[in-house]
Image (cartoon, rainbow, N blue to C red; front, side, top):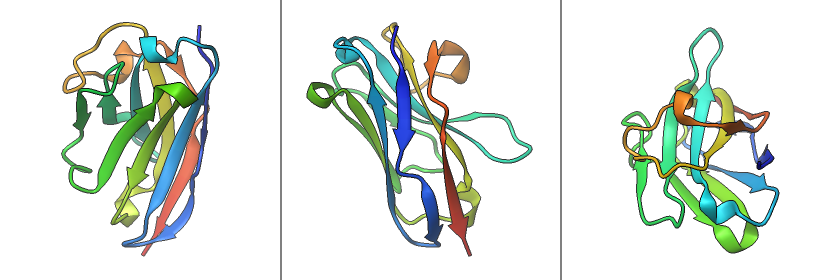
Length: 126
């Protein structure tokens, strides 16, 4: 089992940047496929980005491609989401999630994930 804690959210103007972090407990962080998801008010939770266990494969939703980048540091038990050129429509609660399975990062969905953090709020202002 793994526990996840997100941090780094906040209020940012259009065009600004934020870096989210997801700190994981335990010493087996490298055995989990990791993902970032987000949920805007009144909407379903959606996939943002995924990364394979050793970071060799990544995937990003079309809506964030070219602006957001997922990464991980297994030595520090931490996953990251670098968010650049933020837009008001990026406003959401961002969740970190983990699965012990080797998922296809391009097709993973929220139903594939076994462990979730409590989320961090990102608010993009016009």
